Image (cartoon, rainbow, N blue to C red; front, side, top):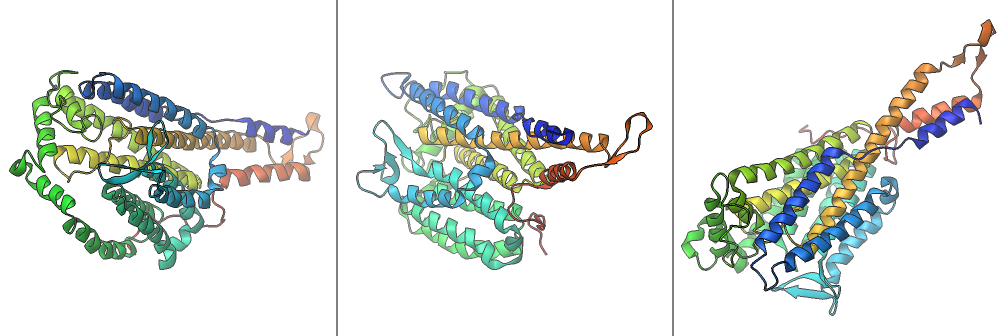
Amino acid sequence: MDDYSRQATRLEAIGGSYDKWLLGAAVALASIGVVMVASSSIALTQSPFYYLTRHLIFIAIGVVLAGVTMRVELKEIEKYNQLLLLGCFALLIVVFVPGLGSSVNGAQRWINLGISKFQTVEAVKVLYIVWLSSYLVRFRDEVNATWQAMLKPVGVVGVLVVLLLMQPDFGSSMLLLGITTCMLVLGGAQIKRIILPVLLLLPGLIALVIFEPYRMRRVTSFMDPWQDQLGSGYQLSNALMAIGRGEWTGVGLGASIQKLNYLPESHTDFIFSVIAEELGFLGVCGIISLYVLLVGRAFWLGMRCIEMRRHFAGYIAFGIALWISLQTFVSIGVNLGMLPTKGLTLPLISSGGSSVMMTCVAMGLLLRVSYEYNRAVRRQEVREDLEGAEPDVAEAHDGAPAEPRTEAASAVAAAMQSSAARGTSRMQQRVEPTFGRIA
């Protein structure tokens, strides 16, 4: 083995490291979630630690799944993009199969696994983001240039939305639409082309609210929850009372009054209100800061990956950042009375087996992106050092004539240069994303 072959071997042996900021923010939010689930659910059952025990079990399963995800190469995941899309449709259809699907409070969103129920849309969020990331890599030039390529993911998400509305799950439908729109913009689609489908969908979405009585009640109660405080406005009015009691520093951990069977879903959809009551404004600001750190770091990571032409990794980072940020915004907005009531959990904090496990998988995928990015940066640095230290013509010892580099060594060097510039895209000489240019 010549020197260049040994150098190439050493280069491939260089590994990466996981982003400590992402990992720290995720662990901090999950730890806060454990404490707040224990506090908010302590009075809901005769066994005070029933929900806490379940939450810890689901977190443990989620950590295992995240660990497995962190060890899988993104290029291996990208190979199965079409199967992932088929998995999205299958998961949303299987809830309607008798014997497998399970209904809770009139919604057909779960499948019965025997020991627990699983809400399939939580897995769909992860699978859909991976598929859409792969699609934008394969067709990003066409997405920017043609209507057909841009409308294909719109049609896919349209079918998914129809299946979700049949369950019904209006909140997750809007979340997937939001993720799709934003990822198309980040993938280079022109904003003026995206506006038209949005305007065409808007009347239909408004009609879904107006002609569905329970959705209309949510809108009216959101506008004035005190008008029917013991009826349609019961959840929001109690949430606002909990938030108001918290003031600056809160009433103290475990001292919430509203969680004592006054505030429905205090450990899931309305856990933010309990946090505000017990930890106050300062505690809320701390939690929001952790979300800002997590999402901001994910967007930063996505940008760095795009700059290195690792587009698949970059789009995955964008998609997960959009998912976490949009769902967090909706969950907090519902608790504050800024948005109509939707059944979306607070990521990494709220109790809920499906949500906890799939959010952990998303964090594992995001950490894998950070690992491969860091690995690429370290290899690039070593490669540049090697290229700078070894010219094409080697200097001879003791003044002897120089000898040209062999063809094999030149091939190894060319392969190393090619690997530095190559991302996960299957197409070469691509036009870079325009990030939603107007013209």
